[in-house]
Image 1: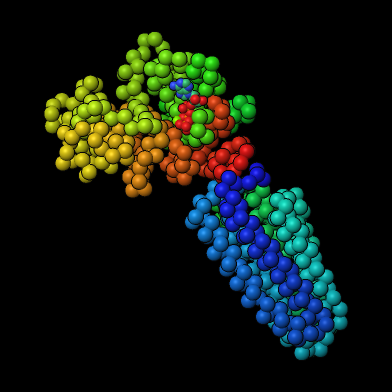
Image 2: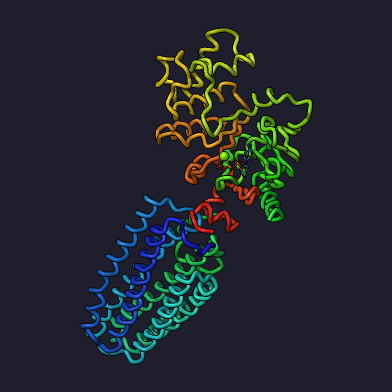
Length: 236
Length: 270
Ligand SMILES: Nc1ncnc2c1ncn2[C@@H]1O[C@H](COP(=O)(O)OP(=O)(O)OP(=O)(O)O)[C@@H](O)[C@H]1O
Ligand SMILES: [Mg+2]
């Protein structure tokens, strides 16, 4: 796709403005993931509250991105790569917002888990899984801004590791619950948190697919399990 | 480029094998004296389809459109080579009468050019010379129907005897559209038919084009990407006399393969 500028330079400025907001949104979401598991690990109720409150800013930013993108459609009637850019903006911002919701959920459950007796080792493995998703998110945002379809594909493949980590955690929690029924409540919460992180991975994967669509004009083959069954505008 | 272009076209042929080809050009070149205006162009115009020609000013859209009904014959310094057929018959065959050809392949020009006659006679001209009406009321019917299709009837029905040249620019353009559809051409060539029209008249002409498509082939030259996207099923992008890309309109406007097409339609430099 051409990287050259539009003859109408205000169009480029509009698009840059939107991309800057997406990057800011991505930054806030990364921060939410880190802090939500940090709150659990350091049993920090205030930090958990901060994450829950910060989700409002994420929602508002996503709303702003949608308004800006709708405005570009109305005023500029984008086509070809410009159209893909705008369609991608809608989906990517929605994915990021959902990841933010999961982080908020983790923070909320952290508050409950902190009140309970510690289940040894569980916070660290959850943090590892969150770290994996966070790195994928960082890479996919780089891929997005640099139009790097290869990096996006790499991120997409890495979601498999997240799925495997989730299965491992699931078995780990099951073991804890069977060993000591007093851990059941905490482990139920922890399991939902792990599930939340696994879902974050799916949304990161969806962003990766959007990047591939943005760059190539074609959605990647559905050769890996995906939660998102939304039909895409571009049909080969 | 010509090579990949042929590839594109063979894919396109497979993709829409059900389409019958109305007009076909192979290896067409057009020269104005030393100016090489059209360079080795191959195009298939499908029946019952709207084909849009897009491209920067001076790239040869009007020139190529005029190849399709031999309107270039009227330009002294113009020389056309290559083969163009209408339903398999070579339209440049010496046996073909250009006047008969232009009744089948009608044209609406870039600049409105009403005859210095009444509004009625402008529209009745074609049906009269081609003997398309039995009697006066027949002719009146054709004129009214044509003016309605061109979205002009309501504005002129009370002054059909007034001179066509006395209409506004946009009204003259619609008068020329009425004149072109009055002979029921099999192929209608329209060179920027809406450039002088307001949004309502534009919408009416686009509706007409869509209606004509059920029976005829329409080829439209337009500088409005939105119009090309709205009215056509096939789009051809011309650049410096070359046919750069020719594909389904959907493809051209969502994911064109040539960077020159992409730059042009998205309004980019280079
Ligand atoms: N009658 C003519 N005599 C000499 N040269 C001509 C004539 N008509 C067109 N040309 C030249 O042929 C080339 C193609 O012109 P053409 O009118 O086909 O372009 P176009 O794509 O229709 O442009 P526009 O969008 O401005 O109408 C141009 O370089 C033009 O100068
Ligand atoms: Mg022209």
